[in-house]
Length: 395
Ligand SMILES: [Zn+2]
Image (cartoon, rainbow, N blue to C red; front, top):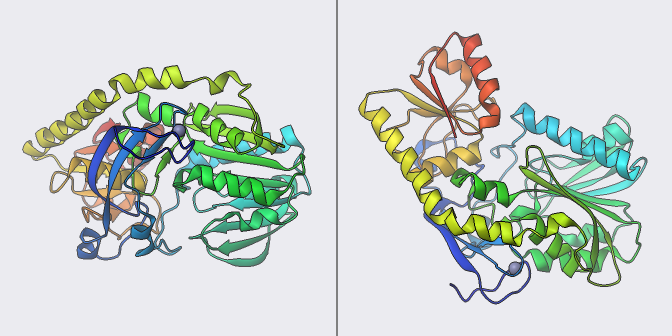
C-alpha cells in the first residue's frame, strides 16, 4: 500500500499492482541518433489501483520530467499508422453525429495528437471548431470539407471550455492527464450550466489491458488507466450526468457521453458497476503479468540462441514499452513501422533502429513479432507482397 491518494476520486489509499524502472518519459518520440536515443530521459512506473473508484494511476508520474523533452510534431509518432484505428475513429464519429445530431455545431477538441476527431466531425457533419494539443502543428482556419478548424499548439487545458461551444470532444487524450479529478472539476467550472453542452470522450479500457496482461500498453506518458466505472465516477463526481458509456472496438476503448449537471450524479448505467470484475482481474494480475513478461524474455532468448533474425513490428509507443520492459539488447535486430516518418529513426530507451517494411527485402527476418494482434493480417499481407515468409508471432 502507499500513502498516495487517488487522483481520480481522492480516496486515501491505492494498492501497487505493477512496477518497472527506467522507462522513457515520452514513448512516441522518434530520435534521429542511436546514442541520443539510449540517453533519453527515463522515469519509473509504479501503477496502483484505487479500490474506491477502480482507477489505476502511475504514482511516480512526474510531469516535470516530460517538460525537459516536450514532444514535437516532427518527431512524434501518431497512432494513425494503422488503418484499424482510422476505421474505428470514423465509426465512432459517425455514430456521434447520428445519435446526437451534431451538424453545423461549434466544437472544441481537447488533445488531438493521436486520433483527430474534429476533422472527421467537420467533414462528416459540417462542424467547425478548434483542436488544442501540445504537439499538433498549429494552423489558422484550415478549411475542411465543410467546416473550419484551427489547431492550437498548447498544453491541453480547460481554458477553451469557456468559449461558446456545443460539443467538447477528446479522442484518446484523457489518459495523459494525471490529476483527472482536478481536470474534470476545472472543465466543469469553465463550461457553464447549459445542459445542452455535450461532452464526448474516448479512452483505452484498462479492463482489457488487465485481462490480456498487456504490459506493452504501460508507458510513462500514459499515466491514467480507466475502467468504465472509474471513468464514469470522475465525471459524475464533478457534476456531469453520464448519458451513455460503452465499450467498443473489440472492448479496447471506452466511449463516454456526458452533459453538465447542477450537482454530482449517481451511477445509473449497468456498465459502471465493474469494481467486482476489476478486483477479480487484479487478484491474479501481478502474477500472470510477471509470467507473461518471463514468457517473452525466454522466447526471445531461445530464438536468439538459435541465431534467428528477429524483428518487432508495431506502433512506436508499444515497441518502446516492449523493448524497455523486457530489457531487449541484441536479441532483436530492429523495429518495423510502416509510417515513413519513423523509418531511419531510433527508439528512445534501447536505441533500436526503426525501419520501413521495404527494408525487409534486403534483410529478411526469420521471425516477425506483431505487437498488436489486430495488425497481424495487415502485416502478413504486406510480407506476402514483399515475398517474405518468416515465422509470425503476435502478442
Ligand atoms: Zn479512486
